[in-house]
Length: 63
Image (cartoon, rainbow, N blue to C red; front, side, top):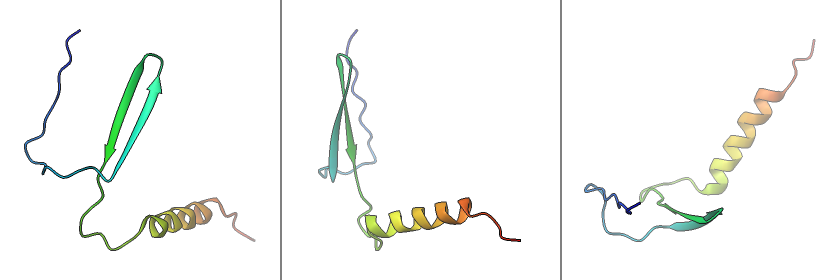
């Protein structure tokens, strides 16, 4: 099977902010992540929102 590389024309030539390699059998998947340039919230802020939403969804109503 021939390798095909896909290239998007709308992306800039900047380096990824994080790169993760995942091994699955004989394959290695490389995942590159980019963060929004003008973001004001941190990863900790986003995780706090996730935890708050999860806690609110799992609370039992008191009668």
